[in-house]
Length: 241
Image (cartoon, rainbow, N blue to C red; front, side):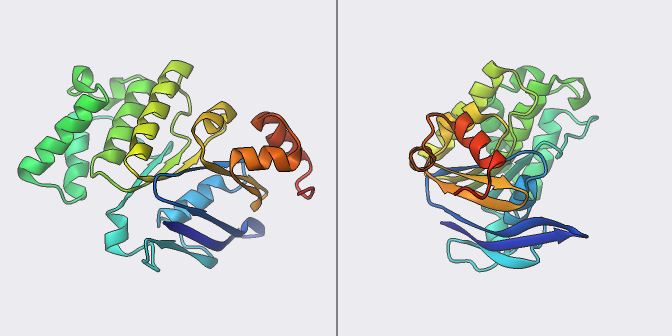
C-alpha cells in the first residue's frame, strides 16, 4: 500500500501543496485531476522520490522512506518531460535503462525483447528516436517504465499529445498492469480517461486536495451526474465540500 501523508511544498511565495493525503491499495488506480498549476506533477515527483516535501511523508509497503534503494527498484515513473535521447535507437535506449535498473546478460535481453514485443516497437526499434512520431515515442517511454516490472506505477499525463485511439491503447496497458495487482498513481487532463480507469480519484485545486474518494461516492456527494460536472463544480467552488 502507498500512503501519502500531509505533503506540503512551497516554491518561494507559492504554496504548491497544502497537506495532501491519500492512499492507494494493491491493484488500485488512483487518478489525480486538476487544472494547470494545481500541484499534480509536484505530488507525483515527491511520491517518486525525485523531490523532497517541506512537510509530510510517503510510505510504501512499510518502508518509511521512499528514497530507500529497495523502494526505488519497485517504482516505474513516466512523465511527459522525461524525453528520449534523440540519437539513440529505442533498442539502445531500453538496453541502457535496463542496465541502469540492474538488469544484465540474458535477463536484460529477455526483458528488452518482452517490452519491444508488447508495445509493438520492433518495426522501429533500430531507428533513431529523433525520427519517431509522438505515439511511437510514448510507446518507448512506457516500455522503459515497465522494463524492470515495477509494482508501483507513477504516470504523469502519459497520453498527452496522443490521438484517442493511441490513448485508448495506453489505457489498456494500464488496465493490464492493474490486473497484475500493481498500484497506479495516474494524472491526466482527460476526464474521460479518469472516468473509465479510476478506482479512486482526487481533485487538486491550488495545491489543496479538495475532494478524494471513489467516482461514484463523489458524484453522489456533490449531486452531479458526470465527472465533468463534478470537476467544474469543485474547481469553481472549492470550499463547497
